[in-house]
Length: 206
Ligand SMILES: N[C@@H](CCC(=O)N[C@@H](CS)C(=O)NCC(=O)O)C(=O)O
Image (cartoon, rainbow, N blue to C red; front, side):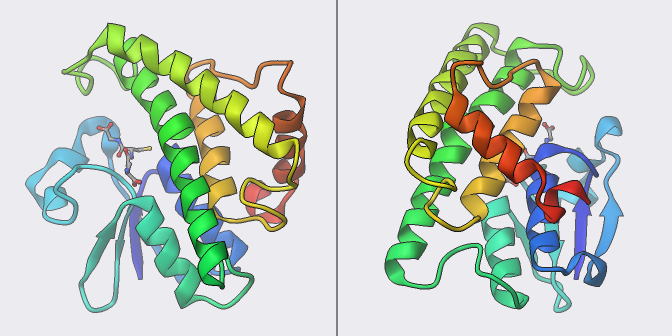
């Protein structure tokens, strides 16, 4: 199993945390992609993921799997250990819903703000910016954080009592926030408590 990624970038981190939760980081070969020099836009990389994003998982049979929810689902089913995507139909649906909300309302909103309303990855890579729209994504992200604060007022983790891919996505959204000064507002005490709980998990500290 090979993972093409950039260490410490927010989306690749989703996969690395899932692997760490499964105690499987050592079973995977990581191949760094030189994203800052646009390797992810080369023909060779586009053959792996036509949407030019990392991470990408390559299975032993040569299948390429992109998109973090798909990759983390594969990891969850392939490796033993506590489920990150749920067991029962209800658990699976709730986790999937919350994961998607963490992705659209926080992680993607912050990513869009970063790429469109800030210098992002620099002028060589940010060739199609829409600043006004990007700025609106900042507002959207803050509303997303408020939503998760209200959720975490009632539950230990984003999708209930167990740590799941929904937590991983929200965590990595906040990591992305660290790239562009989007932080947890002081009033969101439930989100902050969740953050402090998650921060000490072994999978986060590796
Ligand atoms: N929806 C994709 C997002 C992947 C993504 O955007 N990754 C970033 C790195 S965190 C990337 O490759 N960016 C390339 C670019 O902005 O040109 C997923 O879930 O994997």
